[in-house]
Length: 82
Image (cartoon, rainbow, N blue to C red; front, side):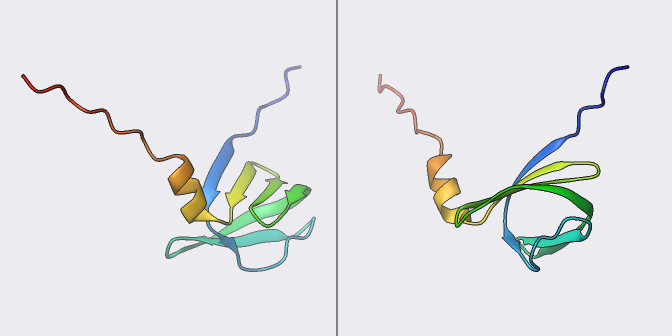
């Protein structure tokens, strides 16, 4: 039997409550507040990112959105003048 693959979300935001296995994660992204299903595993927590897994989804919550925006900014391409 093939194991179902959980979706993965990469978000820029902040935790509103401490993570705990068995409890929902509550975090904000912009002006929206999210409440997840129960956390089943906490993979990593540091000053830049929180990686956790719920019953349904893997979450990567980048807690430093400005740094991520700068790192992911597209490189401008200059057009040649004729």
